[in-house]
Image 1 (cartoon, rainbow, N blue to C red):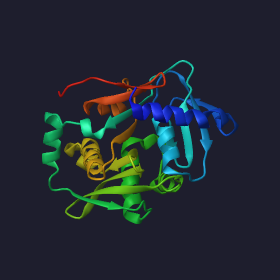
Image 2 (cartoon, helix red, strand yellow):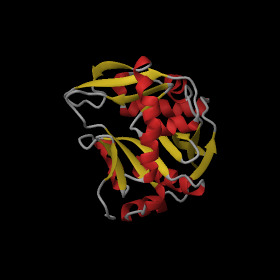
Image 3 (tube, rainbow, N blue to C red):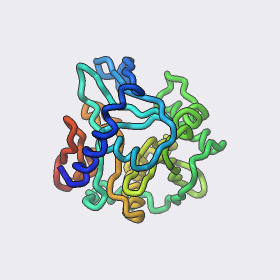
Image 4 (cartoon, rainbow, N blue to C red):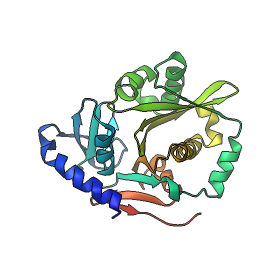
Length: 249
């Protein structure tokens, strides 16, 4: 365990004994369609200091709107928080190709905003990916993206002025948390998800941020297991961040 993680563990232990009075378990069908019940350990939170969010992230927690949560599933441990250490990252051949393929993309940084353009693209993405759920972009912005407890921003991707992707991130002094990414399905051939993570890595480097949290890695779910292409990566397993596979493929 690194000195950084040891310090985070010590500080989080000061918070942890009081969590049960605010957090509760909620059982639902697995959102990733695995054959097990999912149990969320979660609480609604008011805005708090970046360092507190950093301690929760370093302890395997995630954010959804103003809700912090971690998984307490009794029969499954497939959801593993994944983290990149930015200074250690090296692009592989496919990632270099993806970056080159997207040299014509304009990148802009902006406040999180529920404007017409963002909502329309988010809704197009949701209708393509999850047509049976009847999700809408307005609800995602109001209940998920903008209902936040820490500082955040959007990283917007444009092609000839047209918005084709948008990454929502939380950001602190020494950490970035990838909250959500949506894109135009018609731009899928550009590998926009990979390009977004490459952009997050580069942004972290420019801001001297070392830790980039990418949500959950789930080996059995294709939409979640591509994250292990960014190496070396770290998984939060049994309360410890453990380095995954080494090397450049």
